[in-house]
Length: 465
Image 1 (spheres, helix red, strand yellow):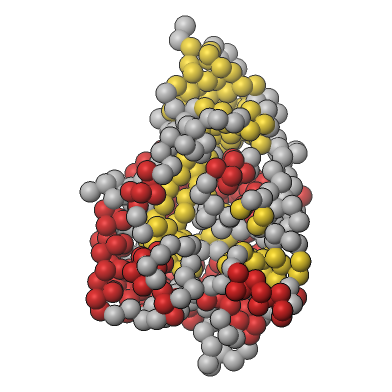
Image 2 (cartoon, rainbow, N blue to C red):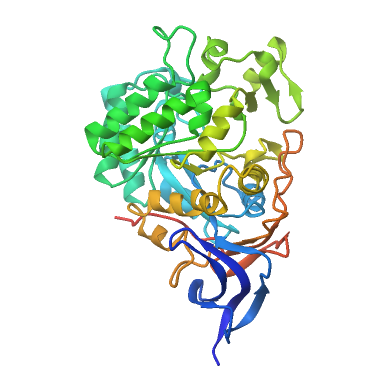
């Protein structure tokens, strides 16, 4: 009798693509799902076997918004059920170099967009960094510079970048004409535009300041004009109090034939770089916060005017407590949103969303609050991200699903005990309840313990032209 590489026995398979929710045995060989059978009378055998009795077996989670693309972050995210971590908001200016740097060195799958921000930085600041703080943020591009920006993004897409990334709030000087041109470029490559919109919330003087509604209208107009697909990142942390209005706008755009999707994370605080344009003059009014709502993760201190100025000159990540809880609930429970972390941990400091987003969805919103179903939570974390990317990168047709022929990126978790443990004071604390996390048929988390020195992660990449 044939023995498969790995057999998962007796688990409750939940697959949002087929709609199956039943006990099944799953046989895996050469990194793919080969057989799915009813447990009764099954004679499947595996060289390695996992007894998943009492556990949920589901597709691995695909995080489309993961900034921490290094070993520390991959390890933390694996313990939260993430099998594919993608940097699609900021992206990179050199797609080949980005993928080469991670080849055969990652525990989970990885991928990147061709980024508008890094293209601007490489041309206008002659340097690197995740977001700009000098000319790339504050100066309009010349016609010659715009041509070079378009060339960098085009090259990145031709080399397999998964999407085009934008952070319009971080590049306020980028004109609407410039952004429209990049949208048009994305359309030519069937690449979705993953956009952090220009403004947020509902500023106190709506006539003079750009809020979230006007900012969403800008990018939806770009999508309508060019035919490009639009993905609005972290809708609750840009929508703030008007998040329900943004969700209504997205729903209306979709009902009128536009390809618009969005995402959220399940926390009431955001995080960004303190040196960025987000904290230019007027930030208190724009964000609706004061110094006392800013947390410096590396020390745990709440900021004041003096410490804010000190850290802004130094640079680094700052947590912002500003998302209304009702907006978190509206975004998490909306059928429009996938789950994505916007995560980044550095030397164990950062925001708990990196380590705990998916466990919090399953433990808090599904089990404790019963505000979404288990099937919907899994769909938001796996199938919906795969569907957003599969037109551009057909390999995602094999991800976000457990069907015969699918990639064996699989999560096995305990629905009774899964919960997030990360806090603002201990943001890298691993989630509990994920008993097995399997990448291409290889368990990198086994019996709840991360297995060091395994690197089965593969590049998630669009076709290279």
